[in-house]
Image (cartoon, rainbow, N blue to C red; front, top):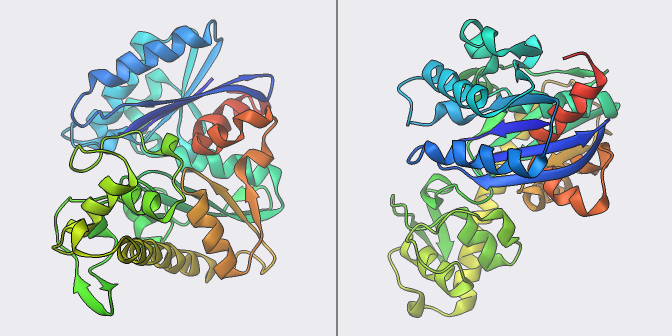
Length: 339
């Protein structure tokens, strides 16, 4: 069983041999409710039944609930040790699978290594590709070829600098982090630096959001409807939804969506400029933000491969597998190489 422990969601995947047979996603806002992680782990473990091996990766250690990433890794590892039985291993990226006893001496291998698991699985299944996973908060971009992961960065700092980590997410990113100004009814209007709306509102208004990808409350705690999203987006430019026609708000939402695609496009160009991939290399896309990544692939004039296409699974699990790519990758990789 693979586990991916984020700051907002817990994702898990169960395999038999190397076939994924079940996937979970639970809301775990550990920045304000660390106990939600323990509760979610218990729920999943009970539903999964007897599991012989657990493989764990995390990004939740960066949550501001913890005074440091070291503390975050140690406390998350402690929760796992207390609540799971069987053989438990932590994923350390290039360092491979590590025992719980190795956690303290391998903190920065373990911290935020989930992207490496997904990219490693992709590298083992496809000749070459730019692997991209767009989750609710961030986007990972990693070239893979010759059965290898060609990442320049391994820490969050280095990955941000290399373009391999972009803090743009499909649903939870605040609109003030997407654009400084936006076109609206023929004028350019500055965007308010307030958490009035998120990208979930944008995706909902432009009609591409699967509500299963928006598990957290809206910025104002209000209704997660098109009308509610229009109201929140309007506030970003100092207006109310009644101040313009519905079509104007849809165009404004498209402007935010375009700004986000451009940010990820710029990062992709930075990564591709290293000339490690041929012009024929496709994008392997994962995460809730696959609709955005497919738009990006069209701009880059590259083919698209869904991450779930690389994994043996029932057809009805394909969306869940793409959302939980690191957890699925760990569970499958554990069957292919000694843990």
